[in-house]
Length: 218
Image 1 (spheres, rainbow, N blue to C red):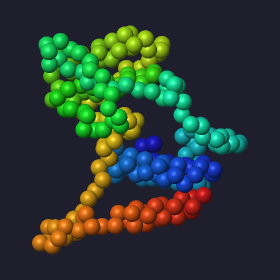
Image 2: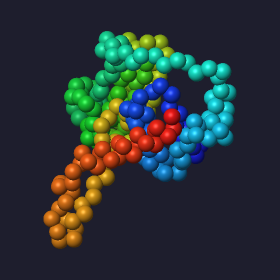
Image 3: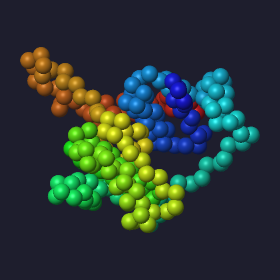
């Protein structure tokens, strides 16, 4: 909301869920808001809590009880998606399905357009260096998918330009959020120490620090 990202963990959500949500908030702040937003915790401060619920229309008298996490149904249409490359290399615009999984950011070629087809949404990603014909026909291609694939009534067609992707689109791809790497010796004439770090120890320390924060939040 504006310059604030509210982090509200349910009282019964587990540590892994809290960690993933907090990681998402941090990535959202860094890469979407360019560090111009603050992560705030409604459960810690009354004023923040009041503002949080005010944005949602008021705090309910009771919070819904937790429900067990079910294994995702692979046959559920809302749990499936398809990915296509759009190109006119042959002189005619064609869609080629890409079945490799997981999807990675490297699959998005700046010279082409791509379609992420969901059950009730068709997202067209337009590369900055894509041909004018591909850019011009992006929305028409998306609407064509709706018709050709018998999408449900009300299916949305969205157009996203390279470098302007939202967090939802990015969540389908590995690699959008870079992992910082530091070489503490190579550029000083010493042996490169990056590969010799005990990554598991670093990760465990980070996880422990995150756990302490989440325990504090309740």
